Amino acid sequence: MFLTDYHTHSLCSPDSSAPLTAMAQAARDAGMDELCLTDHCDLLSADGKLDLSFRWAPIEKQLALTRPVFAGILPIKMGLELGEAWEDPAAAAKLVSRPELDFVIGSVHNRGRASGGIDFYYVNYNSEETCYAALDDYFSCMEALAELDCYDVLGHVIYPLRYMNERDGNHVTLDRYWDRIREIFRRVIAKGKGIEVNTCRGRNIADWRPVLALYRDCGGTLITLGSDAHRPNDVGLGIRAAAELVKEMGFGSIAVYERRQPRLIRL
Image (cartoon, rainbow, N blue to C red):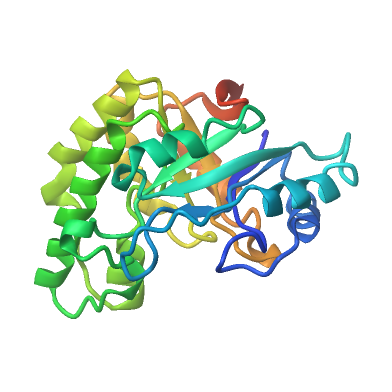
């Protein structure tokens, strides 16, 4: 089975200190056939202020150091996790116009600026009411993101649940949001985009089953796999299980990208 980790972070992300060389070696050790570096570029800071400070140079340096070491052994794609693109679509479009860029994850990490803009990580989910208010905003932001052209796949559609349920002990579901998610998927598919299955370092693979069922029902075909690793020990965690789930749910392939163009690899 061809295995890829298309969601990884290096020391070019503010929440990682890992050299790309170490991440690439970990990918090889974990049996990955391809790696994509998707360091963070969030257009909102953690406290909700517009942030246009991102620079490509550190990522280019990491790739220049690492690719020769793994030439012929592990393809390493140049990617980006672009957060909050709807807050400044012109800036987002400029950021992803780089011709050597292979792949872009479009993510929602923060509440919209109209709702304070805080990163979902920093919300205290002390009640179901708080959870559902955050999810209302989360999917409103995702609806805005889905209309743009600056991404290739939607990142971690179930993202806030890792903090609401795993961390803060709630039991919220997405049951009230499936109709909204369906419309988001239809828009994404119509634009030739896809979704990722994000294993959250191997912790929440089963949670993707209803998401994949809905995506298949909408006619979706483009799926990438990602561990969301921020350190070498997490690279590839859950990827094989995610690939097996994708196949079980009726998808015959996963997508890899080069210069923003998808190519399907049979599972």
